[in-house]
Length: 349
Picture 1 (tube, rainbow, N blue to C red):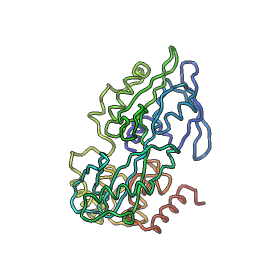
Picture 2 (tube, rainbow, N blue to C red):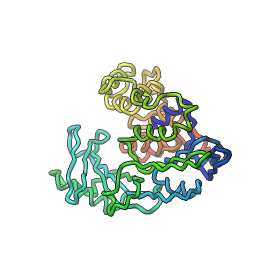
Picture 3 (tube, rainbow, N blue to C red):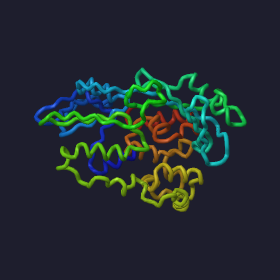
Picture 4 (cartoon, helix red, strand yellow):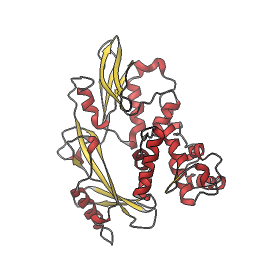
């Protein structure tokens, strides 16, 4: 999200929930037809280069909208996590060696919980519908129980989440053995606009991946490049212009500026938004100044900020994707957020 916001601030057009329905080369350019998932409106854009960074859908985009003959394949590997009430009171993480050779971790999570992960198994269905299986829950509980004094049981699980790793299919026999490195595939016929497809990659290497991608496209994009290669090493993401390790100091500053904030609330805002929390905290001196209070420290002002500046459109965007406040709220409070956002966006009319 912060990368998208940073790009938008530098002039990028961010089109969320928009699907590319077809793409073709014409006159040295890529011509893309796209449809907005909200309004259903269609539009066409033209570009000198195209990057297919569709993650688990990278191969589907290649063979579908792009009609490419690429033979590159993606190996979809499911990774799932469980969240349980906190198992220990300190702020350090545990890394365990499991009997099957995999590594399992247990990490302090959202103050009141412990996050346990992760699994590795091949996945062959729609990545949008990935969900933890009972076998995965049992596996993670058993793995953690090997080390903790109190066993972790499936009934302890309060929430789960799963994702699909889009790994380059290198023919490895087991999901856990497949390469985690990223792989590029460039299609650049003479005189035609290039197509760069990205297989794999993860958060720990994403900036290096992005810089290498631009290096591959340098000849095509040189006329519009505004910065020298490697500039991200000296740049911070939105809200991050404070000293390393200064989150607690920033939380203290928020409490001085807004005395109604509890210590845990101020720390959450510092961790989640950095300096950008001031954009919606404004001059508020009481909780009422932030509008409706939805519980767990979530205010109307915060939600409206996310809708206006971070493309949040529904309660899941706010409660589970941008934050994990859903863990701290009742079902009624989560429903209240859902109804309010529908009303503010016109869906509830």
